[in-house]
Image 1 (cartoon, rainbow, N blue to C red):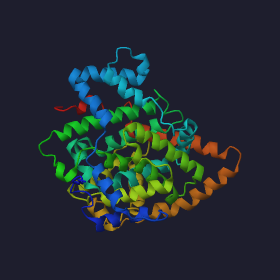
Image 2 (image 1 turned 45 degrees about the vertical axis):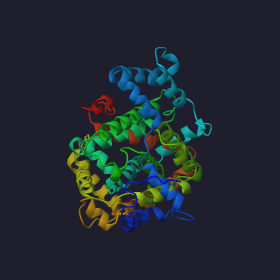
Image 3 (image 1 turned 90 degrees about the vertical axis):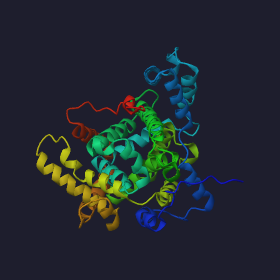
Image 4 (image 1 turned 30 degrees about the vertical axis):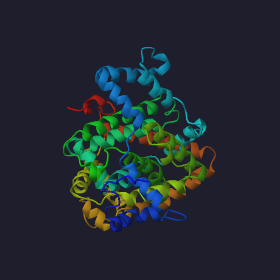
Length: 407
């Protein structure tokens, strides 16, 4: 039986990867190391795209990208049944996308959305610092970001767009067919396919080293950042999330990832399973390089660029210090240097804020209506954060047409 050649980036520096993944391993119960078959599968996932969306994109280019995208947007908004002019390729794609997998529990989707609101602004900080910033240590993923203009666009816009999608997905009812999260997820899935096509056509893309752009392995890592890392960060910062709430959050993100195009065998039903998969994925990631420093150092000053309603100078610098403090709990000294972060960062913010936050959450949960208040307050804080990121601009995602080859 032939073995698929694995991209050179897969497990390129295991000692360094183990140090990067050490904070995750602390939360893992049971065996931690991947067996030979799992390790091979992770490497092979770096060569696999999103077959249904890639096939649909080929059809779009055959009929004209403008025409194809117009019909796609109509199907997103109305549903495929209300798009009688839809051709067979579009009907085949949406027939699968609109059919809920048998494991989906719509009640759990809404409960997961409410549970995401419990963390309020703390959840936003976790995703930025433990998901995005720490993730810049993975130079294999960075290569695609750099080639799509992440440095030129700037970190503030990327965080704003990612936060817009996250909030669309994590409002109660947001993942119902035709709702904002559902539409945003399928919009991002199309953007990923356009990026995959565009970057793959570049002469300077090294398939032997990087594998396929926006591959299953890297999409899996992104999904785990929004689920497993999000839950780990809540524990670290004192947000109380019960076992049933954690299960609901995982269920929500399992469905979001499925709709995003992550293959079903990479989706996880339990928290420990997701943390184990995250640890394995981190072992596979290539070590930091110059792109890590460029992306990380640019992100350091992002809080100074937000659109604060008042006290902008003070709030910008306070948030900058808070983010660096959170990052220091999860990124070791070598990683911080690789990301171009200032030296001497101390975890003062988690140490000072986590105990009172934990006590506050515990106390409020004992009061009638206390948990509901936490959810409502948290959702409002997250939406206020989105407005601070976008300022007076209309919060919307990147136009997919801007990523078409040749643009």
